[in-house]
Image (cartoon, rainbow, N blue to C red; front, side, top):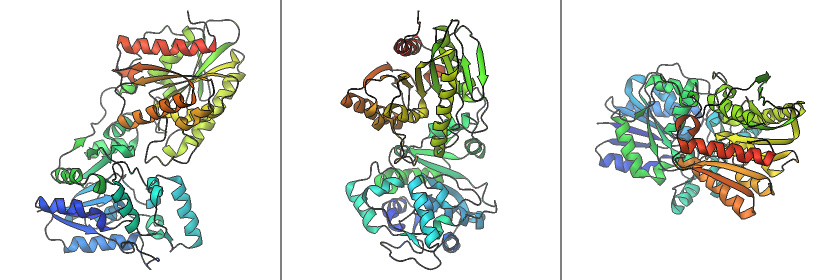
Length: 503
């Protein structure tokens, strides 16, 4: 008989698992809902000794009391840290570890590193400086969004979450996790909540880009399940989560294939384009037209995060080279840039890289610095916010292809400036050319529709070019006549706003 040990996340206790535990027991399994020290319902003052190490020891004692060898440890949010620590000390007792909408911490990682919201991280650090043994007050109302999407969570469940939440002992978030590696080979399953911005497609895309952590998941045979809900599936989709946990315990789930064939982003561009001269300066490549005098420029901004060690880098990917060369063939300077969006916390650094690249391009004597367009792709779409909010006079057009236009839940960017769906209200009559794909991932499509609605409300000069049967990254995935037509229409529209020759 399988025994599930269910460990809750920050500010919560075993009570969040009651429906899931009942479902597991109804299916013939045993279930143990864990409330760790200091996390009692509506707890108050800090409990002496309530830290990560104490929580690990509590789980170890529980594991020792559970009869049989088929023990599945399930960790949600913060709970994955004591789960990994306990598994490391009792690897022979554990048959599987299940991560519920949370990453895999490594040796030396404090739980704070997995908290997505930067505001929460800064607050914890500030409180810890004042009193390292203190607590982080429990969230209320909309503050729960800082820990993850509340999508799918009924109003009464959110109210109960707030009512029963306990202050989180600061040492549980700041104390580093210590692992010997004894549990490194244990079977592992990830439950990804798509409404919180995670999905199997994202994991596979990162593996294809060469991300070491994502590729390791493939090599280790980690299985995955998706749930179409937010960060608290035990409250928003308990029946579905019960089914997933039972299937995970049986060794089922999706496995990310080891990348052997050419990744989608490295497949050929969908159009044959005559080669034009290309010059490289630092992180910037200029694709030059056959023309006299300064010419307008189109700067292409890639998405990410792209691992720092990924090769080739985005400016050498076929789609970006193809676009830039096509632009150059039609009379403008095509510009590709490598910016340093290597992790979600690096949007500020990436924005600085883009601003520096634009300054370099506009200073080039072959470029008409008064006629520049910016073209944002995928997650690079968030970087459009600054330029939409206050467009400079030289910016003649903003374009975007299958972009992310509002931070996804779980990215920790809710309070940042990187919100094009809000910034578009400052765009005035700046032309905006949006290429929208019909087969977009749902979590991204929501941000596009939010942007389109905001643009319509404020009267922005938005042109939408639809690719009904196109996927995210369609230029190297869907080489159809409809896709080629969409690329041609978008390029010619942008060049038209620049007054470039597009004959």
